[in-house]
Image 1 (spheres, helix red, strand yellow):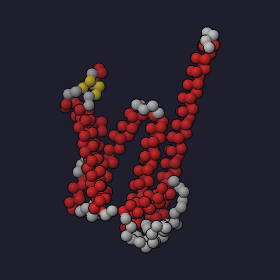
Image 2: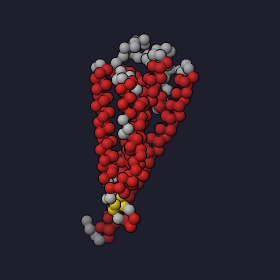
Image 3: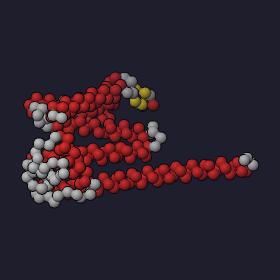
Image 4: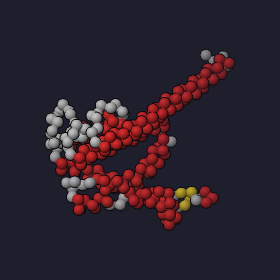
Length: 244
């Protein structure tokens, strides 16, 4: 697939996300809230003020059309960094996940799933950073930057597809953040700094995943014990009443 295919797909999903963000802003402005004396407020001006004071500023900043910078940068190198303001929508996503936990049968599993998705997203962002720094340094200038050794292509092949570049970078990022450590020895200062930061981040992420997994298992065991206690109470009551 050529670059135009990926550019078109990027723009479609990019503006689909913008549309969802704009719909969220409109819906948020129409949601009433409990005011003084537990009275539901629906007055437009008060709704707007309440929305602005409870996260509306971040919502507005997240939909600022920074992609207009593409007019000057062009689409050949769109510099997606100008879209980082979309990350300001994260508090709303965190609020959505927290509210969703109260409406699912197993909130622990939902919490663990959300944590794994965040982990995959961080692996993706770290992979993008790795390739960006490799490209700025010079592809194949040493044994650490992309492209590294792989059986599916030559070491000095600079004509890899976008899918190949992403796959290798994601693989490298996964190995680094999970501390498997199957990577080449860094050769420059920024490489040592990046790898050290990745290891520190990997330790923090691993501890979070482990803690959430243990909490899920313990919570499931607790629910099982509560259920068995109720069953035992029912059986004891039936025995007392001589019910077979």
